[in-house]
Image (cartoon, rainbow, N blue to C red):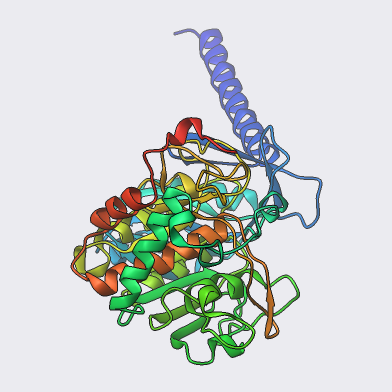
Length: 443
């Protein structure tokens, strides 16, 4: 090879190196500009930097839905492999705090805090974690802004009417409501929910309310403040008290017996959670698992169902109650829409997803519907408890889910050997699930 050819080869090689360097630099810059990508149910989710403050606020690509990111990532691992994954992770990235939740069936979730919360560092950590042995997937820890626990919808308020027992004689009730009322009375002649553990994950709980003074409170925990006090912390903390009242409130001068809770002798585990951080929900479900919950009530939903939440709920529904399955009760939602696959928590097939019936015993116009709906329950009530020792109306699918939770507690107290699938079958039969959930009928 002549000298000229050697020089040309040298310059070509140097040019290639320079171009590679420029490509790498531009690629890194592009990654930061585009934001963060991760996989959810096999689909690539792109988060773009938002103009909103603080800088940790992003938005879903092609959407105005906002989310907030932290310095944390969520890693799904095979149960029992936490030690190996932890060691491998610490060799590759700077890890701050680390916690493991589960196991949920055959898997656990590792919440890892990084020492740097930049988009570049999060992207790199997700890529590294995803490649480790024993890791199923990795996602950023996400707070879905404007997805605070769903409270009763204005559309639901039109159905705030008389309770079942006030609707006249049982025989005059619409057939489905008559069947449900009859079943409730039969179960309550046997039990008031004794021995059943109910976890309610919601915003604040006014457990000092006079109608809850005799409630068997087994455990309370505030996920955000890391304290045992779950009392409401703001005027917005009102949903949890109402949900608990449908299940546990005892009759008094202000609350007639026909409006009292369905399973007043069950045990309550109250978990206060007002923000939808993935890590917070996983921790709440972890507590439910450790407490050996029979029933878990989550009468709320987020903008987008994230895979770790579905996997944890699936795990509890499969392995809770000593293998018989915990009953995971979720509200269908109050938007009057079809529930699409993997859209919100209400799309989880393993859960007991509850739609709301109106006073005619038909699916209410405001209730979401679809294949995932397991039962239809009353979505109206004339009176229930409220924070600050008050009383008020309560309706919607949140009420229906709370009502269903109480019915399940009665059923499990009467027949503790029932599996989760058998309970779902009984609920479907008594609530008339033969109604076509995909083409919902309504008045």
